[in-house]
Length: 133
Image 1: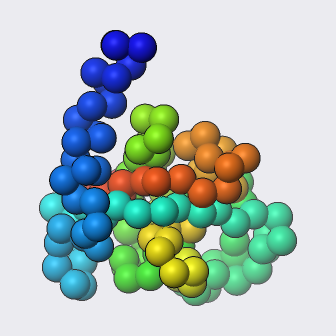
Image 2: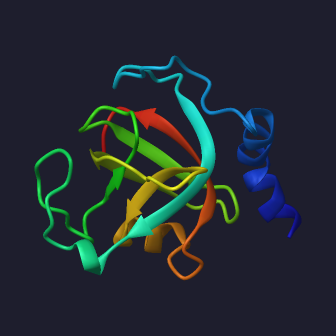
């Protein structure tokens, strides 16, 4: 338990420092904005949207590592940290949302599964812009 706590302590400290903050970057982040960090609630979407067009025009694939975000540019890669269990994944923004108050990102089913949040449906996360997969 002590080793596990030490492993995730930096992530948890960062989450606590930014708790309540929408982000630590500008209002209109760009893909080059590596200082962008946001914390909040993540949700996921899957089978019922399979094959539907996303806001970027591509078809939604629940098995792809993609996500919806309200403001990040399409094709931006972000690393998503599950602050509850320490898991992380990289996803590409290809859709808009989530449209539920308090949520900051909607993940594909595969990304949610890899983050260990699929069963719960929601998780406290941190997201930051990264350079690619």
